[in-house]
Every structure is written in C-alpha cells, then in structure tokens.
Amino acid sequence: MARRRARRRKSKQSYGELQAALSAKERPIEDLESDLYAEIEADFNLLIKATVADLTSDAAKGGYSPVLTGFFASNWKAGTSAISKTENVRGTEWERIKNRTKTIKIGSKTKTVLASGQSPLIKQRHSVPEFSLKNRVFIGNAAKYSSYALMSPKSRLVAYLSGGGGGTTSINQRIDEIMTDRKASIKIGAGVEGGAFFGRLRTKSEPGFTPRTGYTSTQGS
Image 1 (cartoon, rainbow, N blue to C red):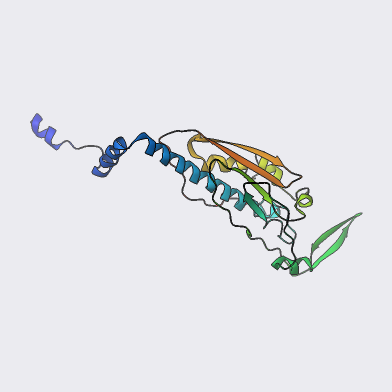
Image 2: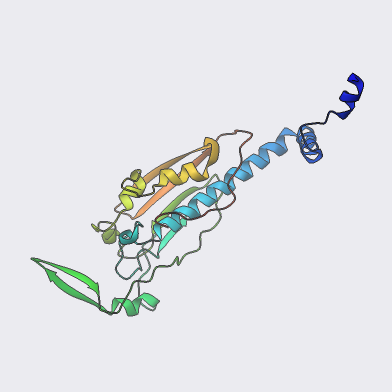
C-alpha cells in the first residue's frame, strides 16, 4: 500500500515550472545579472514616461500644470541635459487659442482668460526617448515662458515633487508603483526657476523581483 501511494504522489510544480527552474540553474550568473539590469532599465524608462504623462495635465482638473491655452502643459520634455526653453506658440495649434484670450478685472487685479467658446488644448508634443541607467535624466518644460508659468498660483507642480497631499499623486508614488521591490534608488532634484527637475538612478542587484511592463495613468495624468 505504501508503494502504491508513493507512485501516485505528484510534484507540486508543473512540468513547465520545473523546466524553468532547471534552466535558471543552468544559466551563467552573468546572464542573470544582464537580465536584471535590462528589467530595471525598462522600469526606469517607464517611470520617465509616466512622469511626463502626469505633468501633461491641467491643475484645475486634478492634474499639475497651470493652464490657459494648454501650451505649457503640452511642452514637458525629457533629455540627458537641462531642457532649453525654446518653444513658442507661433505657427502651432495654440496660436489661434492665444489670439482669442481676453483680460478681465477682478477687484483691483486683472486676469487673462479664454474668450467665450474657447477651450485649452493639452497633448504631449515631445516623444520620450529611451534612456540608459547611466544617464542623468532631466525632465523640464520647453515653453519659452515656462519660468513664469511655474510661479502661477494655479500650479500644483510643487506638490507633485514634494510628496503630494490633498489627493495629489506625487513623483514618490510613481517611483513606488513602477520601481518595484526597491531594486533601485532615485534621487530627485528640482529647479523651479529653470523649469526642470531630474532623476538619477543607481542600480542595486536584487534577484527575484517582477518588473512592471505597462503603465495605466491615474489621477492627474
């Protein structure tokens, strides 16, 4: 009877799982480290794209950027050097919107608003390139007037960089969501006057993690 029971006893792992485990054991440690590096790098690039998507939004509607025509919110950009403020509305879709603004007086102050029937346009104008973990990545706004826009009372960019609050998603939350298992450390610096901030990642080998391979935008994106 004992022999019959022993014959019927099955492995808790499937054949595919056993094959995968055996394959992993046979692989050189150099290959495993290479795969780990590639997966961390993929997460790092996903984080940069998610951050640009977060910033391409309207602070008045749960996002982060101050918006009148939407040109500023549409000009977030990522690169390996500080983002130059070179973009203006001339010759773009936003030129028509800008030409239909008006100034109103509220008490002793004046305020520029869109003319009746006009609405802002927000869309990402600059594609996000792929970066290496060795890169120091800057995310900034390329609009010529970005230094002034960043100081707008409508902006929620400081809350995004400093940890959120009041329902605001923060850059730290994005790091926790995407850089799984604390497999890397990221340093965030901010330069409000220049309209740019950067992230720099230092890898930390940590086997056994599962990287995220997709990003679903949440509040503010």
